[in-house]
Length: 107
Length: 322
Image 1 (tube, helix red, strand yellow):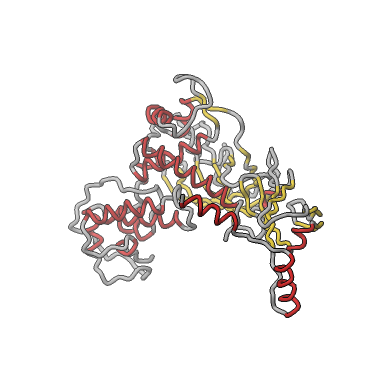
Image 2 (image 1 turned 45 degrees about the vertical axis):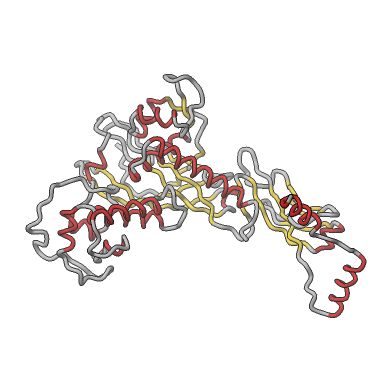
């Protein structure tokens, strides 16, 4: 049995998210959220399946991070799926603006 | 242990109504939510506000807290009086907040909040894989050029073999690969919460943030630098040296370049799987007119190079009027 509590100086590799995809069930299990709620997020355009009709949805690995954020927003701010979708949309816009801002200097 | 002034944390008077407390709490939670605020320290502030509300938002806890008296100052050394909460009945409603996020002060008064409730909520399935953790890590833009190894320290709830939940700090040495960009998430497999029984542990996700840099501005995988040039370098063209992540290179400024022109150096941005470009944004620096010779030169330019820089501005204003 490996004991996670032993102090280690091992260097761990942080790796970019790979191209693997997750099904709706895998996504829900990973985040301990309800499939209905995730489905609502999809219907509101807050997250996008890469492909597939309802029932065979596949999600990019990065969707885990986005849904985790959505879950925090729901818990902390008591947001409905529509509210979560608006907040995520605005956060996307802010991040696009930051990317553009960098092109123009700080003054 | 230090006394915490929960009213001060919410910027409220001690006679605030429950309604005011709730409104203020909601406002502050939006403001400092770590997913919304870019401010450094927002996360600590968020937890502090959550803890203040866990007490003041609950009439019973608030009454108990209030009877500690109003003479305490935030940060003052504090230990609860014996039987301090006698006569107050708790309905045991779940406190609002992260597991393990509460201060020593809070825990000495009300116990660890949300402990079991939070850890196991929605997680009753004994076959559950461990939970993922999400954290942000701030690195220098320049660390993305070659990669970097950093030590990060995380505080997370941990279930010991006897099933008790404890808060544990752990330090991880993490190798960040080269080519990462702002906002990108990296994964450390198995570094989240341990799984129940034989189950897989969760993963740790790290979101990359860049510290502001004096030279480079990152825009996705592209890098921007301001490149100061003289008016004659811009007008006549020149060959000058500029810094790039891979070391300085010499490059040609084409004749007739203008203020703000962008020179693109292909593939010299962040070395991502599809490498970004480096853009040098020309900043024309005017020589100061601080001597007779300089003033005479400017006067001569005015004579020899008549220029009306506001032609297009007037044209546009004309259009706007029509």
